Amino acid sequence: MRPLLLFLCAFTTLHAGDWPQYLGPQRNCTATDEAAIVGTAEPEIVWKRMLGTGHAGAVVFNNRVVVTHRQGSEIVTEALAAADGKAIWKHAYPTSYRDSFGFDNGPRAVPCIAAGKVITHGPEGIVQALDFETGALLWSYDTVAELQSPQGYFGRACSPLVADGKVLLNVGGKNAQGGAGIIALDLATGKLLWQATDDEASYSSPVLLPGEQGVSAFFTRRGVLLTQTSDGKVLADDFFRAQIDASVNAAAPLPCGDGRLFFTAAYDVGAGLWQWHKTARKLTNVWKKTDLLDSHYTTPIYHAGYVYGLHGRQESGMTLRCIDVADGTIAWEAPDRLQGGTLILVGDKILLHSESGELWVFSADPKKFNLLQRSQITRAGHRSHDAFSNGLLFARDAEKLVVVKVK
Image 1 (cartoon, rainbow, N blue to C red):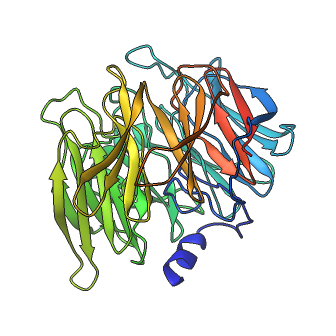
Image 2 (cartoon, rainbow, N blue to C red):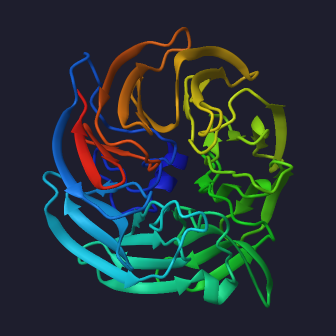
């Protein structure tokens, strides 16, 4: 249990059901301390709240939900009561960001709540720390002015990871000291503590390697990267990206138990499993395969030896697959194709919020695809990752946050 406790120390005391960062309390798309989902009853809409633009999902901590979105020419971060959506505080700063392809001009990165602070990362490259209680600005760091962080195709999207008093980000920058592909900011002050690599920024967000104190895993635009949290020392670096420039690495590294990490991307990249050897402090590849689980942007789920994820490009349609992580073989594939979506594991059930706005509830069962519930909960056309807290799913679409009781 010690590695998990070390991970949770980054946060103010966690309460049952908290979802304080991207992909959940352990950053693996898994809800903890939640009641089992039983039966096939229709989900119940508890409350709704209109939002501006953006693809950043909500986070939930200590009975508050924090959301970041764009209203007009401002990036807005708000704290709301998790029970009913009533406003608690609001912070805004001006932005002139414009998406290069005209898709969406709002934030992409999910905030992170840690040590009494809310850390945000805007699409224009501004990193800010707000006071969790009041919303007051504590510090701000401009990755463009300080590190020449490039906009890329779709703006900055890396959700902050807080570890050991540091804010870790893949920004793809550089300065007079050299490459700043990966950076660590001081959580207390926002000061740049270290920088490492020349890797360009991807749309993926980092995770901590379970069972290994002080090792963070990134999926940069170049590929697989492990760094030492204390000083940014590169521990492993493996090329894993498309040969064409117009491509995306977006799914987060997925821990699969016993020092194993699963990476996946579309654009003919495929999926692969890497093994971290703790004593030797070395990372080796176990297998790589294409046309297996090529994720356009969705971070898969690991449960009891199997990975559940979405295979294929959004434009041509995706299929839901279950993969045996040991050898990279397909256990099953769901019959219906879909445009895309995101996944959350609750006990032995998986929640899929699709781009069409549907909520699928199915069993985490490697033997067969067992769909238990399918219902419409939001409008179509959105890619934000949901949060799950105390039996409630916090989902958003292009215009609002929808809070759903999953029975």
